[in-house]
Image (tube, rainbow, N blue to C red):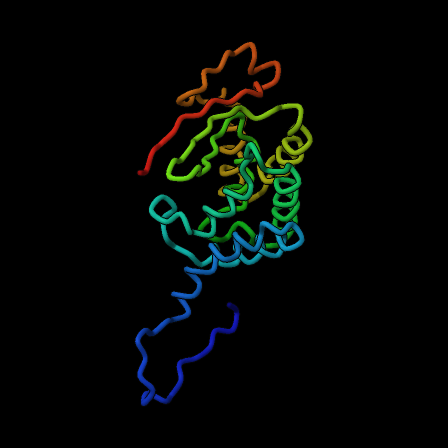
Amino acid sequence: MRNPATAGDNDSIPQRCHFTDTDVQIKLPELLERISYTLDYLPRCCDLLWELAKKDPRELNPYPEHPIRILTKLAKYDIYKSLDVNQIVLNTVARWLKKPNVHNHIYSPLDILEPLLDKNSHSTRSDGLTLKSYTFAVSRDKTESIRKEVIVLIQNCAVSEDLKVSRRALDSLRKALEEPHEMVGLKFLISSVRSGFLNSYKYWNFSVS
């Protein structure tokens, strides 16, 4: 990734496809995501995804394989995901924030921290030819320590002398103060939200047959 191979000088060998370094880097994030499912490799995979994200100018919505999309996916809460994963991602981003010029890129490490402040989310699982999409509320009690660490990191950015960094951090704090968004299949009772974000979830099916 850091030392891409140069093209060979021998053009006499026929080639069906010609792959560039850009082609390889576009395919790497999905591979790193799969490797990251082994927790021992997760910090290193996050580091490599961040390196790729620094120089990937593509917009996020059209490209699910974008390294920032995968990093935020790793950071987000999920019904069947261990909180160890979220904590490791948090620790990794905290390490990045200690480095100089970490905010001088297209995307910000705060983009990856924000999902750790979510109060509700969704999860999709395949069941044969059916996709089941679950909506769920994140447990406040179980994620409280993670949230506190995230808030401290964002607050540190908010007092930065760099106005761009400060404004970006304040935007993250604003989002953290918002009430949970109402999602299809899940109605929030404000009293329940304030007492613990709820722990229930509902699901609906999408048949692809």
